[in-house]
Image 1 (cartoon, rainbow, N blue to C red):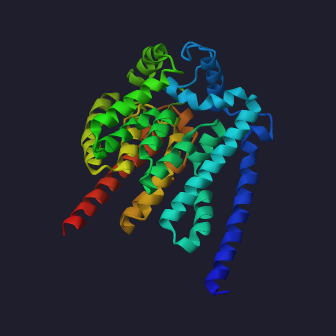
Image 2: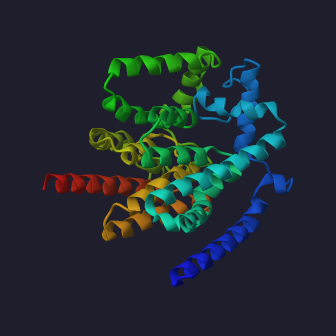
Length: 367
């Protein structure tokens, strides 16, 4: 066996041991290992799925805890036929499978073929230690599945319309991802008709009046109204919360306006990474577990940008990977607001990195 072969075997063994140690430590945070806690968000979606099975308006029931449209409840309907503890355990296992699968896809894209196994274990170790990932897993959120779908959009070109539809069902804020597919479509009328038919099909299970309830209650009062979400404000890393934390809410519409040229630029370049970042920036609610979705973008950008940009990219990743409870409890001031918005600054810097990379690639192609 060659020296490199022995090194690879040692790395594999070390990474396996690190994974076992990681899951032993993290197991105390998951409810099926003990009865002290529950998957808070999964439990809420589970109850909402039971409600819509009984044809109840999910925005008029006591356990309504979603800020998203009723379409987001659909993926939880199959779990609602199972006992809660069984459904949550299966959901957790599917999350793990999706996490390891997206790391395998990323490893296949960025590592040499004979180092794919090492790359998968290395990336999955980083992925599951990434705070947003752990945060989403503990809550019982869908962000790992969305990250897998975004990875598929980044690394392969097949079945993209299906992948975008699944992404939008899980996270409606990524509706902008339909735009590059529309622009690339050679039959735009047929593309539009197909998507309208898909929307109509959702009404077979989701009543149209539930969308009206969503627009009247959640969308208008929480997402559109010019006020922050109290108590959990720090965990919302949106621009909307940032301008409130820094006590300059009047800047909110102007910052959104400044993002329009970025949106148009990414649309013209059909940049999936750019449109994902802009979708997060324009959303009024960006909980920290949403940053799980950024992991494949960090990995793919790392292989494309210069070393100078990689240093900035690493700082952005670290900014998204931290959470400091102090900022959620302390009295808001401008300085604390600036530091508490570390995720927002990381998103804005990512926009700059992607813009610079796309412009550099364009200039290189012209030479």
